[in-house]
Image 1 (cartoon, helix red, strand yellow):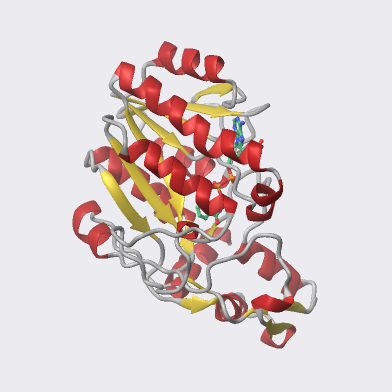
Image 2: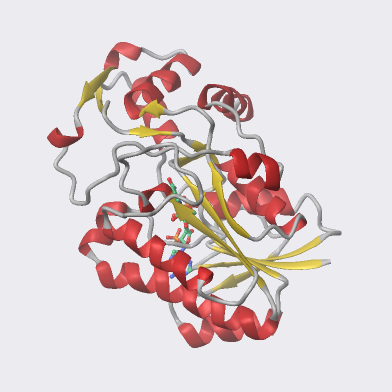
Length: 299
Ligand SMILES: NC(=O)c1ccc[n+]([C@@H]2O[C@H](COP(=O)([O-])OP(=O)(O)OC[C@H]3O[C@@H](n4cnc5c(N)ncnc54)[C@H](OP(=O)(O)O)[C@@H]3O)[C@@H](O)[C@H]2O)c1
């Protein structure tokens, strides 16, 4: 029986991990760490209400459980908020990873951490795990620092880099591109979407599976997790409209420059999935195919 702590168990990935792991209760004992109440809609795991930015509380709780694996999904993910509140971003996105690494080293625990395409500058696109990062935003910089905490440590770790994650879970505290575009178009609202940023969106079910494969295969190192076809965000919105049979004419293309966002975004990301296919045994499909799976689950 593997003991697994999921930090951020109230989040999109956190709740998706609960769904996946709790199907095999004979293999995994699950502990969820999140702020406030358990908002996952499930009670068949051990929930710990904790602010993980409290170092001593975090280390004490982890030490009490002595997990075999920690999956760290909690993060400050709003890119513009990170730019304006750098201290909070440093604490959650970097210091917490350092503390988890320190405690993991004393109890011999394997740490699985989630990173992002925003560690790259977006000039090249189709990034390999070995490409050189150059973050444009504070969020990207904080995630790169968190990766360095792990790569400079001696613990067993897995870094899963991912892109534009979407899905639906019991309690949605944050929106995501698919649900937002779908809702706006259903309400017949016109939306403006950038046509000069390119991404390979990630179905959260696949990201959760990548975490589980990392555990089951004890796969260490860095892996890319995303869908396999690069699209502009405008094309992504068009695919959403097509899948849910909504009015595409409501989607208007705009350029990034007109948005005036606080934090700069990389123009073209997307991942090379060769290593993930070969070593993790995960074969992500196109956004179009993933959307179909997502729609079937929604109905
Ligand atoms: N979403 C994306 O598009 C995307 C893209 C690339 C990488 N990622 C990475 O993927 C990971 C998972 O993302 P996600 O979309 O699942 O994030 P999410 O939905 O925002 O979930 C994060 C969870 O962590 C919890 N949390 C935040 N601060 C905490 C604290 N101090 N103590 C305890 N819990 C805390 C949040 O609690 P509350 O709900 O109470 O706030 C939330 O439930 C993150 O590392 C993110 O950086 C995400």
